Image (tube, rainbow, N blue to C red; front, side, top):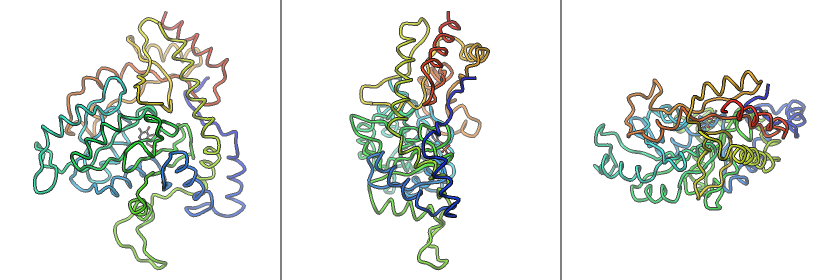
Length: 377
Ligand SMILES: *Cc1c(COP(=O)(O)O)cnc(C)c1O
């Protein structure tokens, strides 16, 4: 079976894990946690990084640090993984779901501005959603498939409406927006995931990135039970969302090879795009002019049945899968405030992801390409 996407653990992972055992630093303090923080900040072009237990908990910490709380609304594109919405819910807030732009599958800034202008109003010093009265507390763009959103446009809107921006950059390590890395794209805080299916993994884990030292100190403080001083004093309701040294050991070994891993993802994606160009009924993932995608997943957009292609590939020993079902179609979020979803509804069930592990061989990729061509002919 050629799997969809499995970790590439051929570096120092095993040696570093052994170091954790030998040194007894297996928990949430240790040299690998510190190294992971500095390597992640460096890779993202951010001043600071706080490692977390997952991308989801990183998003929650970032939202709380940005001031999101009970009853608030956070603007979110509907075409994302459910964890983006769940992180908002875990803060006691709700997503305000918006459609994506067809040319990037990321939050549509034209729609965003129109919604904030027409569906929200300034009342008592806060921006409030007219229909529900809820405070609009933040904007969460998502870097779909490792592709940055149009952050200059979104940043300008955020400034006009006085809203913080927390970016779900879960799979975007290595991406660039107009030449700028993730930590310098314009979000106040950005969040990576190091889950097992991401390009760089720590088994499970994540990181919050930012440039404001005060805000990042708050993120770190919240992540570790909001403790003050050496005794058991805590100044607010904190969390236990720290990454362990064991997770960080794997993550550091991966980050040492991050450039090569991202380059492999881009090469695989370009090879598929080239092979399928001109094939009837097949489109590629969008490539907006502002983005240099990290190409987390590769695949194609079909006009025919996704399930049919996945089944035909499975018989050939090739794993292919559909992609995210939008949030407005998920049971817990059916009643969330939402815009018209013409773009998300038009695309989500036509996306197929294809094998794209970073150590996928040329021979394996050729086999996938031949099988797709045959299945669609
Ligand atoms: C992977 C992912 C997450 C969740 O990260 P975890 O580390 O699995 O919690 C959130 N958002 C997006 C867009 C993702 O791809």
